[in-house]
Image (cartoon, rainbow, N blue to C red):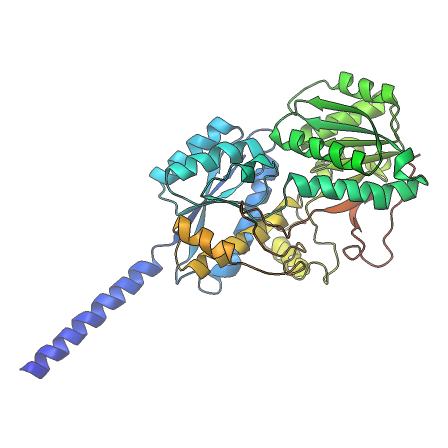
Length: 407
């Protein structure tokens, strides 16, 4: 009888364990992606989430994370209030385990604070404002570059790439700094001014504007009046395109134009045309055209994107989102949990050198959980296409700047 009971008990235990395993496999890790999926920049919120989905496809094909498949749920947010509402819905109704984002810094600011109220990690891959990590929120991690990095690369690119092409030392170059007026553009512009002045450049003006403005003539006329050699603008797609059209219409022709964070997608090409854009440089998220030694896996990412979406990437933000999601999933796997504190503790131990990911990023978080090994690159419009031109080891052999000074 004892052997019979033992056998029966073993059978019951096996059945329970089997049921638990099936239940675990049927209970996916759910990640809420906060981005604008409607409105003027919806195209780019969609593009960020395409990068996330490619990373999820990759890990799910290998069995998922912690023995569970991973799902992405979208939260549409084009402003801070919508960000809060999206987090509340995803946390209470959809029961997500984690949050990622975000194309708009102001949305990230509000949404990450809302996520903290539900005890959820907010892993940001794309927002740039310096204030996001400076707040010290205990649930916030940023895997991608931030304002300081974009400011640093815009300054080093100006010094090492643009100034030599113009045939002048930086101290003899006059620069106008323009920016959209949210925490994103303002934080980058402040750092640009500080760093450029340290390098000896002459800042002849700083202008700001709202990225939703329908007329930016005053912004262009003020800059034109200062006669800068280089005009630098940090903004989004709508205001960037409007500023460039207004420059063309007003006959404002600086020798070099450097856009920061935007201006490197087909929307700008459609709006301005290849001839006008020739030689315009952009400090932006790394692109798949960079060398494989700089960004290992960039080619495979591009192939996966084309296979899934039947087109080239719409914007470079998707590859940075893809890499950021891979980092998040690595942290969850190392933590053995989606718990906020455990994921952050696992993230704190991550340590990979530059050139470990498709973007050229490595990973090492500072005390504020900002990844210190994530940098943008400089690209340039050449014959209607965008090519990586800086840093030198990211640019393909034979690639060099063109049309500087601009004709």
